[in-house]
Amino acid sequence: RSRWPGRRRWWRQRRLSGQAHAMEGRRDSNSTHVLSPAAFVKYLEEKEGSVLAAWLKWFDLDLELRATQMQFGHALRGMGFLGDVQGTFTLLDDDKSGELALEELSEDEANLWRRFREFASGVFTGAKDMHTKLSRLERASISVATERVLSEDDFKRNLAKLGWDGSAEESQLLFQALDVKGDRNLTMAQLKWLDAEIRRRRRKENAKARALMEVPRKAKRNQAAAKAALDKFKKYLKRTYGTYIRAWRMALSPHDLMVIQKTPFCCACTELGFSSEVKLIWMGLGKDDRGALALDELDSRSAVILAHFQA
Image 1 (cartoon, rainbow, N blue to C red):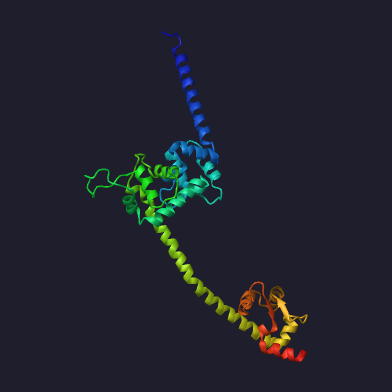
Image 2: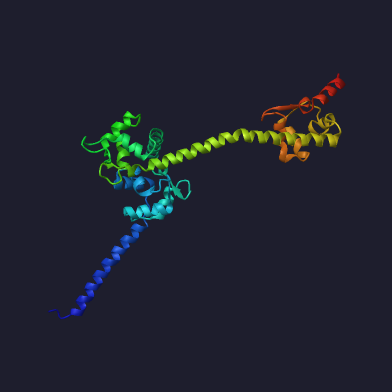
């Protein structure tokens, strides 16, 4: 029996307290550690095998092709990341948009994923169609109602038959990235991203079609606005100077030039108070960006009168 039991308890408590402080210090040092882009990519590859696999499994859960800072934090906490989440995100967010895209992590794998999405959305009508066309029944005795099994071999072989031009390594990387459960088989649920991609593609095509339809309408509106601006300008010249010849010689071409370039013409219009309508006036005259203006283009009758007078 110890003669100093109290002192022994005191030393034991002090030793345990020191160990606790050391563990807390290590935890604090980890939480302030910021990973460089290269180190972060290596971390994702060690965790999930590829950047694309980590992206699909943890980051882009809503299939929006981007991850907010909050989604980024949830993903890293789910992966057991102990470093500085905010600092790492700030370092990775090159464009300072507050969102992270796959391109900012791995440009090569982002290009592969973009190519595959474009291919799949052009070949298949949806996740169900893709799963059906890429899979096969394992045994002839399995009923058609039974869900087909999409293995890696079927995935790679049937993709090539349908026109996918990616390499075998790229097809393998895609399969492993889509196989978020890691059971070496793809279910229809793991191809739901294709439905979202097709909806996104249709929205883009509809927007493009609307924009193409808007082009002639916009051109027609611009032509009407240009005609109105030119009519207003010519009325001002006639009212202020009496004739277009006088307006030409006094305001538009004071050096008695028969042709003036766009820049001097725009300066003259600005001095006359038409600075906001210069482009429309020039358009109404039927001129392009590098054209020049002659008197007969402003008023042909005035040009004929001036020609007779000079003769």
